[in-house]
Image 1 (cartoon, protein in one colour):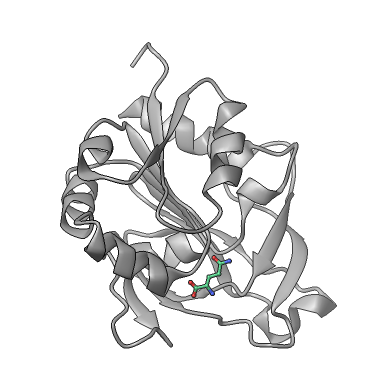
Image 2 (cartoon, rainbow, N blue to C red; image 1 turned 90 degrees about the vertical axis):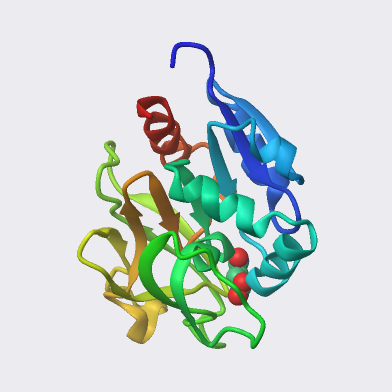
Amino acid sequence: MSAAPVIGVLALQGDVREHLVALAELDVLARPVRRASELAEVDGLVLPGGESTTMSRLLTVFDLFEPLRERIADGLPVLGSCAGMILLAREVLDGREDQRSLDALDIVVRRNAFGRQVDSFEATLDVAGLSDGPMRAVFIRAPWVESVGADVEVLATVPEVPEAGSAAGRIVAVRQGAVIATAFHPELVEGDRRVHEEFVRVVRER
Ligand SMILES: NC(=O)CC[C@H](N)C(=O)O
């Protein structure tokens, strides 16, 4: 792919704008995606942070759930952050009754896993494959990954810091093929676009 790739951001709910801003700093064409015809035109897709139950309902209402699942099964690169990670999982623990997920990552996630005491916190963590040292990670009512299948690469875990409490060691970033997901919000950390850059590299490889 020599021309700038087209990267969509699923724009039904959540922090769509922040991802579009992050992508605008890179050499790509970034667009919101709300309908199947827009989905058909992207080379890669971001599933933003927000509320995964609401997003899963809206995917159904907008007739996007099946088209999206099919495109991912066909190899569409996807980056999910927080609620996006939940949407990509094979199985969701503590989900709402009608919560659907795309089964694009062989992971089991737990929604709102960090509990009330650590509703939101920040940590500095190492992410496998990113050069130039650890990154600041913002967690907001975040999930964590309870378990991963054999084909899933663990990219990051919660460091042993007091704010993390018993969450230390939990898996918070993974990759399986062209699908990358983080429990934290790389789109919220201005000045560090390494996760989005890595995603663009994956899109360009396809
Ligand atoms: N910041 C986020 O995306 C939070 C995710 C949200 N708690 C959910 O269950 O979907």
